[in-house]
Length: 398
Ligand code: FEO
Image 1: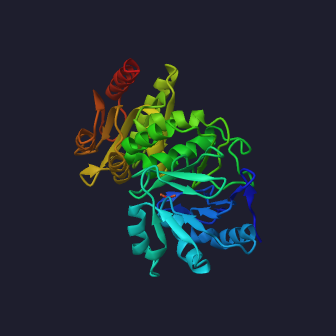
Image 2: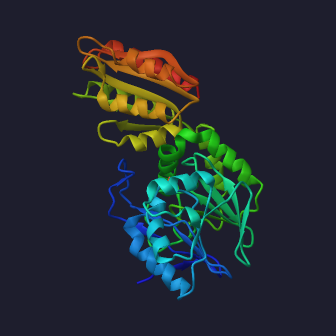
Image 3: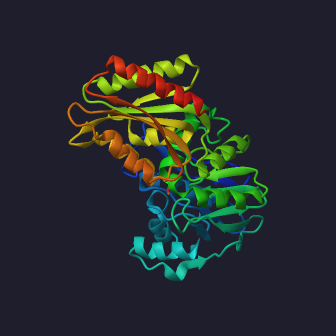
């Protein structure tokens, strides 16, 4: 049975929530699920704006047919060709041979790659600032390359002031019947998931995100309709400000993320002592075991905080494997503009400090503090002085 929600008098949400998927993109844990958003514009010409993942395909088709009420579907707009949004595009086009596909030139190429059916004759390509007139509503398309794939467009509907923002302003998390962020009490926990979504999915493409924000600043936006998470009809200035920080790799908060990788507890002990000393000085600290916490959460915390301490055992004459994964993940996501400190441990041949520094040296504008902690198996008296010095150096750079 259909389950639609009204956004305006004639624009509807026709997507759905998936609470069964454990890994988004087969990589990122989504303990609270995810939504796949699609929208329907009911006008002289009817249009669906983006389709959905197969997981919610049945509901999506019920929703669209309910709103069409036997009418033709004139257009399907494809802002983003990643299969979490386009997996049902082929089936929609089969059900509705009358429907024209509206998309960018790059999306047209991807449609040919993803679908067996020849849809080429049904595609109407839109260039920058070109429009689609539906009657009362007009969509204007803007390229948003690499937010998150190269073909991405966003669409601004001027009657309602809605920006259909594709992956931008998306977040992990299924909705509980609430469509709007203000209904859902979108607070710190939800922003943490929005940050984790942004940092991991789009984080590498900060320059492109910033370029999109500049384009969007010229529009009179009254609502944001992203492809994941709630619709924003008010109070989205904070979200936009966070995007401005994330897109420029500017820390949101002065504070220290301590990520430790410990085999038998010595490195963990040093990390805990450092965290306690920082907390005593009034510094905000978050401490994570890299073997326990999925790297996607740590990438998000690294985008949040100004300072990061990497504390790692030496393992196989290298960096403790989960720590190496985290460092390479941060490098791949182009994290920059951070102050970093290192704690190394090694029972017979400590290597992790040198090797972590080599990865960090390949990243932009990462200041590695000279003060380090050098453990041989466990924390000894001489290490306490090193930890004090490191604590002071971190505080001095805040
Ligand atoms: Fe939600 Fe890039 O797809």
